[in-house]
Length: 355
Ligand code: PEP
Ligand code: MN
Image (cartoon, rainbow, N blue to C red; front, top):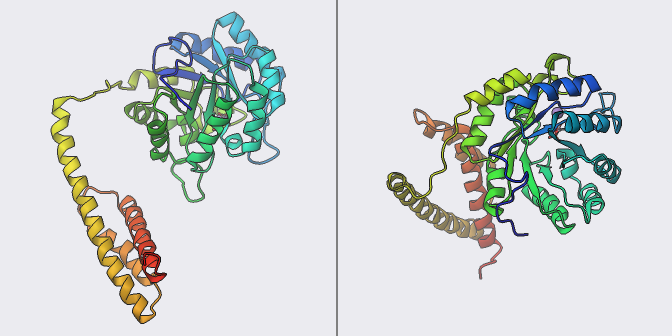
Protein backbone atom coordinates (compact mmCIF):
# COMPACT_ATOMS: atom_id res chain seq x y z
CA UNK A 1 0.00 0.00 0.00
CA UNK A 2 1.64 3.21 -1.11
CA UNK A 3 0.43 6.63 -0.04
CA UNK A 4 1.98 9.75 -1.30
CA UNK A 5 0.16 12.59 0.35
CA UNK A 6 -3.52 11.93 -0.30
CA UNK A 7 -5.67 14.89 -1.17
CA UNK A 8 -8.82 13.47 0.27
CA UNK A 9 -11.11 16.47 -0.20
CA UNK A 10 -9.31 17.90 -3.21
CA UNK A 11 -7.47 21.11 -2.45
CA UNK A 12 -9.26 22.11 0.75
CA UNK A 13 -7.35 24.15 3.31
CA UNK A 14 -5.96 22.16 6.22
CA UNK A 15 -6.74 21.36 8.93
CA UNK A 16 -9.92 19.88 7.60
CA UNK A 17 -12.96 20.17 9.78
CA UNK A 18 -15.78 17.64 9.76
CA UNK A 19 -18.65 18.61 12.03
CA UNK A 20 -22.26 17.73 12.62
CA UNK A 21 -24.41 15.79 15.03
CA UNK A 22 -23.64 12.34 16.36
CA UNK A 23 -26.99 11.25 14.89
CA UNK A 24 -29.39 12.68 12.36
CA UNK A 25 -32.51 12.92 14.51
CA UNK A 26 -35.02 14.83 12.39
CA UNK A 27 -35.01 16.86 9.21
CA UNK A 28 -35.32 20.09 11.25
CA UNK A 29 -32.41 19.16 13.53
CA UNK A 30 -30.15 18.24 10.59
CA UNK A 31 -30.99 21.44 8.69
CA UNK A 32 -30.58 23.61 11.80
CA UNK A 33 -27.13 22.24 12.66
CA UNK A 34 -25.95 22.35 9.05
CA UNK A 35 -27.21 25.91 8.55
CA UNK A 36 -25.33 27.09 11.65
CA UNK A 37 -22.18 25.34 10.48
CA UNK A 38 -22.03 26.78 6.97
CA UNK A 39 -20.19 29.92 8.05
CA UNK A 40 -17.85 28.20 10.49
CA UNK A 41 -15.21 26.89 8.10
CA UNK A 42 -16.55 23.35 8.06
CA UNK A 43 -15.31 21.21 5.15
CA UNK A 44 -17.84 18.47 5.57
CA UNK A 45 -21.08 17.79 7.42
CA UNK A 46 -21.34 14.55 9.37
CA UNK A 47 -24.40 12.79 10.75
CA UNK A 48 -24.90 9.17 11.78
CA UNK A 49 -27.91 7.53 10.15
CA UNK A 50 -27.24 3.96 11.27
CA UNK A 51 -25.95 4.07 14.84
CA UNK A 52 -23.98 1.15 16.27
CA UNK A 53 -25.05 1.30 19.90
CA UNK A 54 -23.31 -0.78 22.52
CA UNK A 55 -26.55 -1.74 24.26
CA UNK A 56 -29.95 -2.42 22.66
CA UNK A 57 -32.80 -0.09 23.47
CA UNK A 58 -30.81 3.09 22.74
CA UNK A 59 -31.55 5.29 19.75
CA UNK A 60 -30.25 3.30 16.78
CA UNK A 61 -30.54 5.98 14.12
CA UNK A 62 -33.28 7.00 11.73
CA UNK A 63 -32.03 4.78 8.90
CA UNK A 64 -32.16 5.58 5.23
CA UNK A 65 -34.81 8.28 5.72
CA UNK A 66 -31.96 10.45 7.01
CA UNK A 67 -30.14 10.21 3.68
CA UNK A 68 -32.77 12.49 2.16
CA UNK A 69 -32.00 15.11 4.83
CA UNK A 70 -28.29 14.89 4.01
CA UNK A 71 -29.15 15.35 0.34
CA UNK A 72 -30.94 18.58 1.32
CA UNK A 73 -27.86 19.79 3.22
CA UNK A 74 -25.76 19.14 0.14
CA UNK A 75 -28.18 20.72 -2.32
CA UNK A 76 -29.43 23.71 -0.33
CA UNK A 77 -26.35 24.60 1.71
CA UNK A 78 -23.60 23.38 -0.59
CA UNK A 79 -21.91 21.40 2.18
CA UNK A 80 -20.38 18.01 1.41
CA UNK A 81 -21.83 15.24 3.56
CA UNK A 82 -20.57 12.08 5.20
CA UNK A 83 -22.09 9.23 7.16
CA UNK A 84 -21.07 5.96 8.79
CA UNK A 85 -21.56 2.66 6.96
CA UNK A 86 -21.35 -0.75 8.55
CA UNK A 87 -22.87 -3.12 5.97
CA UNK A 88 -23.00 -3.55 2.18
CA UNK A 89 -26.63 -2.38 2.27
CA UNK A 90 -25.59 0.86 3.99
CA UNK A 91 -22.92 1.40 1.32
CA UNK A 92 -25.38 0.85 -1.51
CA UNK A 93 -27.95 3.22 -0.03
CA UNK A 94 -25.37 5.91 0.79
CA UNK A 95 -23.90 5.73 -2.72
CA UNK A 96 -27.34 5.88 -4.31
CA UNK A 97 -28.04 9.02 -2.25
CA UNK A 98 -24.83 10.70 -3.47
CA UNK A 99 -23.15 10.90 -0.06
CA UNK A 100 -19.69 12.45 -0.65
CA UNK A 101 -17.62 10.48 1.80
CA UNK A 102 -18.14 7.43 4.02
CA UNK A 103 -16.60 6.47 7.30
CA UNK A 104 -16.19 3.08 8.94
CA UNK A 105 -16.96 3.15 12.66
CA UNK A 106 -14.76 1.85 15.45
CA UNK A 107 -16.90 -1.19 16.17
CA UNK A 108 -16.89 -2.17 12.49
CA UNK A 109 -13.11 -1.80 12.13
CA UNK A 110 -12.69 -4.54 14.74
CA UNK A 111 -14.47 -7.00 12.45
CA UNK A 112 -12.59 -8.04 9.28
CA UNK A 113 -15.71 -9.76 7.85
CA UNK A 114 -17.70 -6.53 8.09
CA UNK A 115 -14.86 -4.45 6.65
CA UNK A 116 -14.44 -6.88 3.75
CA UNK A 117 -18.17 -6.72 3.05
CA UNK A 118 -17.94 -2.90 2.88
CA UNK A 119 -14.81 -3.09 0.70
CA UNK A 120 -16.53 -5.49 -1.71
CA UNK A 121 -19.56 -3.21 -1.94
CA UNK A 122 -17.22 -0.33 -2.81
CA UNK A 123 -15.27 -2.11 -5.54
CA UNK A 124 -15.08 0.08 -8.63
CA UNK A 125 -16.36 3.21 -6.82
CA UNK A 126 -14.20 6.31 -6.38
CA UNK A 127 -15.20 7.80 -3.05
CA UNK A 128 -13.13 8.90 -0.04
CA UNK A 129 -13.44 6.64 3.00
CA UNK A 130 -12.22 7.35 6.52
CA UNK A 131 -11.53 4.45 8.85
CA UNK A 132 -11.86 4.93 12.59
CA UNK A 133 -9.48 3.03 14.82
CA UNK A 134 -10.88 -0.20 16.27
CA UNK A 135 -12.26 0.09 19.80
CA UNK A 136 -9.35 -1.99 21.12
CA UNK A 137 -5.77 -0.70 20.82
CA UNK A 138 -4.81 -2.95 17.91
CA UNK A 139 -2.93 -1.12 15.19
CA UNK A 140 -2.87 -4.17 12.91
CA UNK A 141 -6.68 -4.30 12.80
CA UNK A 142 -6.73 -0.61 11.85
CA UNK A 143 -4.11 -1.13 9.13
CA UNK A 144 -5.92 -4.29 7.99
CA UNK A 145 -9.18 -2.40 7.47
CA UNK A 146 -7.35 0.27 5.43
CA UNK A 147 -5.68 -2.45 3.35
CA UNK A 148 -8.99 -4.22 2.65
CA UNK A 149 -10.43 -0.98 1.28
CA UNK A 150 -7.26 -0.16 -0.64
CA UNK A 151 -7.24 -3.63 -2.21
CA UNK A 152 -10.82 -3.01 -3.36
CA UNK A 153 -9.60 0.06 -5.25
CA UNK A 154 -10.36 2.79 -2.69
CA UNK A 155 -7.31 5.04 -2.76
CA UNK A 156 -8.72 8.21 -1.21
CA UNK A 157 -8.39 6.88 2.31
CA UNK A 158 -7.94 8.53 5.69
CA UNK A 159 -7.86 7.42 9.31
CA UNK A 160 -9.72 8.79 12.31
CA UNK A 161 -8.28 8.48 15.78
CA UNK A 162 -11.24 8.22 18.20
CA UNK A 163 -9.45 6.66 21.18
CA UNK A 164 -9.52 3.16 22.63
CA UNK A 165 -11.94 1.77 25.14
CA UNK A 166 -10.69 0.23 28.35
CA UNK A 167 -12.31 -1.13 31.46
CA UNK A 168 -10.32 1.01 33.84
CA UNK A 169 -10.19 4.38 32.07
CA UNK A 170 -12.43 6.95 33.70
CA UNK A 171 -11.12 10.35 32.64
CA UNK A 172 -11.58 9.81 28.92
CA UNK A 173 -14.43 7.89 27.38
CA UNK A 174 -11.85 6.31 25.08
CA UNK A 175 -8.25 6.79 26.05
CA UNK A 176 -6.19 8.59 23.39
CA UNK A 177 -3.04 6.40 23.39
CA UNK A 178 -1.50 8.80 20.87
CA UNK A 179 1.41 6.45 20.22
CA UNK A 180 -0.89 4.24 18.13
CA UNK A 181 -2.02 6.84 15.55
CA UNK A 182 1.54 8.17 15.53
CA UNK A 183 2.86 4.73 14.68
CA UNK A 184 0.25 4.58 11.89
CA UNK A 185 1.62 7.90 10.64
CA UNK A 186 5.16 6.54 10.74
CA UNK A 187 4.12 3.54 8.68
CA UNK A 188 1.86 5.43 6.24
CA UNK A 189 3.14 9.01 6.18
CA UNK A 190 0.86 10.09 3.33
CA UNK A 191 -2.36 8.91 4.94
CA UNK A 192 -4.47 11.83 6.21
CA UNK A 193 -5.02 11.54 9.93
CA UNK A 194 -8.07 12.98 11.66
CA UNK A 195 -8.78 13.25 15.35
CA UNK A 196 -12.26 12.78 16.81
CA UNK A 197 -11.95 14.55 20.18
CA UNK A 198 -15.67 14.00 20.85
CA UNK A 199 -15.45 10.22 21.16
CA UNK A 200 -12.07 10.34 22.89
CA UNK A 201 -13.26 12.73 25.58
CA UNK A 202 -16.90 11.80 26.05
CA UNK A 203 -17.32 15.31 27.48
CA UNK A 204 -17.38 18.65 25.70
CA UNK A 205 -15.05 20.40 28.18
CA UNK A 206 -12.10 18.41 26.85
CA UNK A 207 -12.66 19.00 23.15
CA UNK A 208 -10.47 22.10 22.92
CA UNK A 209 -7.46 20.59 24.69
CA UNK A 210 -7.65 17.34 22.71
CA UNK A 211 -8.03 19.22 19.43
CA UNK A 212 -4.99 21.30 20.34
CA UNK A 213 -2.99 18.16 21.11
CA UNK A 214 -4.03 16.65 17.78
CA UNK A 215 -2.92 19.79 15.94
CA UNK A 216 0.36 19.84 17.87
CA UNK A 217 0.93 16.24 16.80
CA UNK A 218 0.45 17.13 13.14
CA UNK A 219 -3.03 15.69 12.52
CA UNK A 220 -4.61 16.84 9.26
CA UNK A 221 -8.11 17.44 10.52
CA UNK A 222 -10.78 17.07 13.17
CA UNK A 223 -14.20 15.45 13.38
CA UNK A 224 -16.24 17.18 16.07
CA UNK A 225 -19.79 16.25 17.06
CA UNK A 226 -21.96 19.35 16.95
CA UNK A 227 -25.63 19.77 17.86
CA UNK A 228 -27.84 22.85 18.31
CA UNK A 229 -29.14 21.54 21.61
CA UNK A 230 -26.59 19.02 22.86
CA UNK A 231 -28.23 18.20 26.20
CA UNK A 232 -31.30 16.93 24.34
CA UNK A 233 -29.32 14.92 21.77
CA UNK A 234 -30.59 11.37 21.28
CA UNK A 235 -27.05 10.01 21.36
CA UNK A 236 -23.75 11.19 22.87
CA UNK A 237 -25.39 14.23 24.53
CA UNK A 238 -22.48 14.79 26.94
CA UNK A 239 -19.84 15.23 24.27
CA UNK A 240 -21.53 17.42 21.65
CA UNK A 241 -20.92 21.16 21.34
CA UNK A 242 -23.10 23.84 19.79
CA UNK A 243 -22.00 25.43 16.50
CA UNK A 244 -21.09 28.61 18.45
CA UNK A 245 -19.00 26.63 20.91
CA UNK A 246 -17.31 24.95 17.98
CA UNK A 247 -16.47 28.34 16.54
CA UNK A 248 -14.90 29.40 19.86
CA UNK A 249 -12.90 26.19 20.01
CA UNK A 250 -11.61 26.76 16.49
CA UNK A 251 -10.63 30.33 17.32
CA UNK A 252 -8.69 29.18 20.35
CA UNK A 253 -6.70 26.43 18.66
CA UNK A 254 -3.14 27.60 18.12
CA UNK A 255 -1.72 26.45 14.81
CA UNK A 256 1.99 25.83 14.92
CA UNK A 257 4.18 25.51 11.88
CA UNK A 258 5.82 22.21 11.16
CA UNK A 259 9.56 22.64 11.45
CA UNK A 260 12.06 20.54 9.61
CA UNK A 261 15.77 20.72 10.29
CA UNK A 262 15.84 24.02 12.18
CA UNK A 263 19.33 24.52 13.65
CA UNK A 264 17.96 25.63 17.04
CA UNK A 265 16.24 22.27 17.41
CA UNK A 266 19.27 20.30 16.28
CA UNK A 267 21.20 21.15 19.46
CA UNK A 268 18.44 19.68 21.60
CA UNK A 269 17.94 16.70 19.33
CA UNK A 270 21.63 15.88 19.49
CA UNK A 271 21.49 15.83 23.29
CA UNK A 272 18.37 13.66 23.16
CA UNK A 273 20.06 11.25 20.74
CA UNK A 274 23.02 10.97 23.12
CA UNK A 275 20.73 10.16 26.02
CA UNK A 276 18.88 7.59 23.88
CA UNK A 277 22.22 5.96 23.11
CA UNK A 278 23.04 5.79 26.83
CA UNK A 279 19.61 4.29 27.54
CA UNK A 280 20.24 1.52 25.00
CA UNK A 281 23.73 0.87 26.42
CA UNK A 282 22.28 0.66 29.93
CA UNK A 283 19.53 -1.66 28.72
CA UNK A 284 22.08 -3.93 27.10
CA UNK A 285 24.12 -3.98 30.35
CA UNK A 286 20.97 -4.72 32.35
CA UNK A 287 20.11 -7.64 30.06
CA UNK A 288 23.70 -9.00 30.29
CA UNK A 289 23.32 -9.16 34.07
CA UNK A 290 19.88 -10.65 33.68
CA UNK A 291 21.21 -13.47 31.51
CA UNK A 292 24.01 -14.17 34.03
CA UNK A 293 21.33 -14.41 36.69
CA UNK A 294 19.33 -16.68 34.39
CA UNK A 295 22.29 -19.05 34.15
CA UNK A 296 22.50 -19.25 37.97
CA UNK A 297 18.75 -19.85 38.20
CA UNK A 298 19.13 -22.69 35.73
CA UNK A 299 21.99 -24.26 37.73
CA UNK A 300 20.02 -24.10 40.95
CA UNK A 301 16.66 -25.13 39.48
CA UNK A 302 15.02 -21.83 40.43
CA UNK A 303 11.97 -20.51 38.54
CA UNK A 304 12.65 -17.62 36.17
CA UNK A 305 9.67 -15.53 37.14
CA UNK A 306 9.66 -14.35 40.73
CA UNK A 307 6.43 -12.42 41.38
CA UNK A 308 7.80 -10.55 44.41
CA UNK A 309 10.74 -9.31 42.34
CA UNK A 310 8.41 -8.12 39.58
CA UNK A 311 6.45 -6.21 42.21
CA UNK A 312 9.63 -4.70 43.64
CA UNK A 313 10.76 -3.59 40.17
CA UNK A 314 7.47 -1.86 39.52
CA UNK A 315 7.00 -0.43 43.01
CA UNK A 316 10.48 1.09 43.21
CA UNK A 317 9.46 3.38 40.33
CA UNK A 318 7.29 5.37 42.74
CA UNK A 319 10.30 6.19 44.91
CA UNK A 320 12.58 6.79 41.94
CA UNK A 321 10.09 9.16 40.34
CA UNK A 322 9.44 11.20 43.49
CA UNK A 323 10.37 14.85 42.99
CA UNK A 324 11.02 14.37 39.27
CA UNK A 325 8.86 15.72 36.51
CA UNK A 326 7.89 12.24 35.38
CA UNK A 327 4.57 10.47 35.12
CA UNK A 328 4.95 7.57 37.58
CA UNK A 329 2.33 5.44 35.76
CA UNK A 330 4.25 5.75 32.50
CA UNK A 331 7.58 4.94 34.14
CA UNK A 332 5.95 1.92 35.80
CA UNK A 333 4.74 0.80 32.39
CA UNK A 334 8.23 1.15 30.92
CA UNK A 335 9.74 -0.86 33.77
CA UNK A 336 7.00 -3.47 33.36
CA UNK A 337 8.21 -3.89 29.77
CA UNK A 338 11.86 -3.98 30.79
CA UNK A 339 11.13 -6.64 33.37
CA UNK A 340 9.18 -8.59 30.79
CA UNK A 341 12.14 -8.49 28.40
CA UNK A 342 14.46 -9.64 31.23
CA UNK A 343 12.22 -12.61 31.89
CA UNK A 344 12.14 -13.43 28.18
CA UNK A 345 15.95 -13.35 27.99
CA UNK A 346 16.24 -15.57 31.08
CA UNK A 347 13.72 -18.04 29.64
CA UNK A 348 15.98 -18.42 26.61
CA UNK A 349 18.97 -19.14 28.89
CA UNK A 350 17.02 -21.60 31.04
CA UNK A 351 15.67 -23.47 28.04
CA UNK A 352 19.16 -23.51 26.49
CA UNK A 353 17.75 -21.82 23.36
CA UNK A 354 21.03 -20.04 22.66
CA UNK A 355 23.21 -23.14 22.84
C1 PEP B 1 -19.80 8.26 15.67
O1 PEP B 1 -18.92 8.88 15.07
O2 PEP B 1 -20.93 8.72 15.92
C2 PEP B 1 -19.49 6.92 16.21
C3 PEP B 1 -20.41 6.02 16.46
O3 PEP B 1 -18.21 6.82 16.46
P1 PEP B 1 -17.28 5.57 16.88
O4 PEP B 1 -17.36 4.59 15.77
O5 PEP B 1 -15.97 6.24 17.01
O6 PEP B 1 -17.81 5.04 18.21
MN1 MN C 1 -21.30 9.77 18.54
